[in-house]
Image (cartoon, one colour):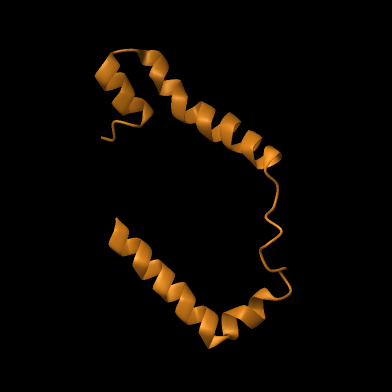
Length: 73
């Protein structure tokens, strides 16, 4: 059981109100942040994505990024 989850916080503190924290984050905080910070304009447009997926250079970058992130965990 994760101590950062509502159940973990409830187990540690004994307060049942902690069970609301994940729901508030998922249904209030994340949509609010999505409204405050709209789409990133530095991302490529959807029309270009198939070309990037076919390009070997971007495929290698994607794999390197994935394995780099896995090593940091």
